[in-house]
Image 1 (cartoon, rainbow, N blue to C red):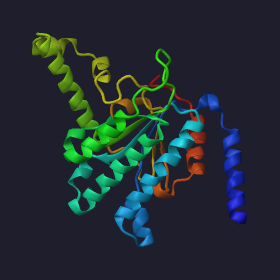
Image 2 (cartoon, one colour; image 1 turned 30 degrees about the horizontal axis):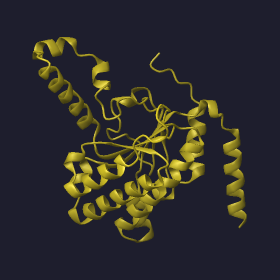
Image 3 (spheres, helix red, strand yellow; image 1 turned 90 degrees about the vertical axis):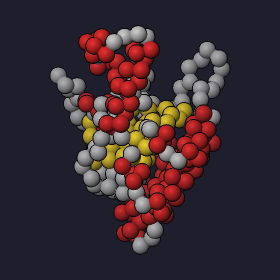
Length: 259
């Protein structure tokens, strides 16, 4: 009882001391540690993935309260698709159910980011259908001010850049441009405009749970000026106080943006 009270007191203190004007607009999260969390408790990996999926809606509420406008959640990498089918199949079902549950709240606008075509057709269909139900709502002519949530499934940073370049080549070829003309006119902005996250600000803050200190290709192009925060806690055990610590750390940094 006393520990719970002290935790709430500490959480409230952290929250009140944060400067909302210094909150990140776009937060990316690598939701890592589901299997390690489950292993430590002596339970199956699927239970860890399920507990991690259950954490997502709670986390999005914290981000919304903090003034974040875009969140990107890395749920499954292209490398993960080579996992043992005995683990991958239930994991894909858990992810699809989690996205359907998020869409059912009608609280956020969802976007799929990743090579969804690499997923089993049934799973890809469920994801696309759920995301489609969250498209722009509200009165005509008024902006949709809901937080945007990118669902990164079948995502790889190199894959994203390769997909962007392929799309540029297809567009230019359809317009009659030669390969030499494309090569001589290609700009960084062209690639940015063809990424999965096109139209969104680059991430200000990237968080990885579980203690691993690498990005593994997450938002490889977009993260050139991002701040990184590595948290020891496994994703299923991630608490609001852990998120507030990340925000506090971010607010205390001097962002030079390459200058």
